[in-house]
Amino acid sequence: MVLLSIVVVRNMTAVSWKIDHFFEMVPDLAMVVLGELLVDWLKHAFITKFNEIPAEVYKDFTITIAYDVVKSRDEDAFSDHSDQVSRRMGFIPIPLSILLIRIFTQSLSFSSRQGFVLLALAWVALATLKILNSIVLLGKACKYIAEYERMQQQTELLQRMRIRKSKSVPASPRMSLIDFSDVMQQNPGGTKGFTVSDLLAHLDEIAAQQQQQNQQQGSPVEKIATVEYKTPRRSQSLANCTFRCYSRD
Image (cartoon, rainbow, N blue to C red):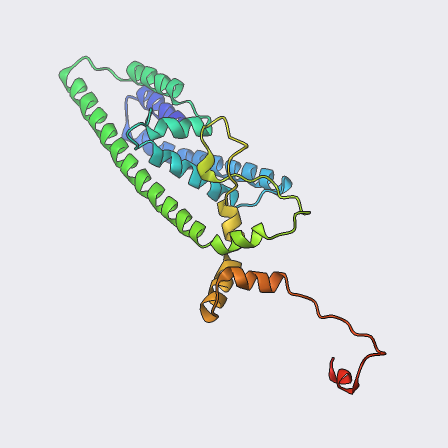
């Protein structure tokens, strides 16, 4: 969008800011935006398809960025949420900002008083837009985090079942999204947690287990023990078998 705005400003400057020329560029601008979206969609689809990455991994990324946005509002936060998200995604906005300022200063003249008034109004409009965007992002981030924590509370029973699995099956190291202490570094010794992919994959199983738990009595630990560690029936010898033994299946 920044590069398209630069192209629009340069073309409008060349035609003395005729509004008819802008309407002629609108179909081309729309084709460029749709083409970029289509190319990015194909790239991500190709990578996830041939690397066998589930599509739910993008929800994991969303939760991670949401925690970055919320943590930037802490009293001891060292930077704004835009800086943390840019570092997380590897995006550097400063060169683009310098390029945008350079192009606008060459294309627009601010010699008169009206030019400076328009520049001040544009700055106020952009600052207001940034504040509104920050409020909307913070609300969305809080919503995603609340939903993620609610799904984590529903996995307590599933977590107890996973602890009782066989020790012979190697468990892949998974980290909780909250354990991401730094952008470029993860602590491999952190506690194991659940990602959104795990929660969505076992959501039906969790709902069925909770429904069964509400219908029956007793603690969930005792139910798991009776289901998974059921004692097998002993076999009897035919020499000591009586007439009542033949009625068994």
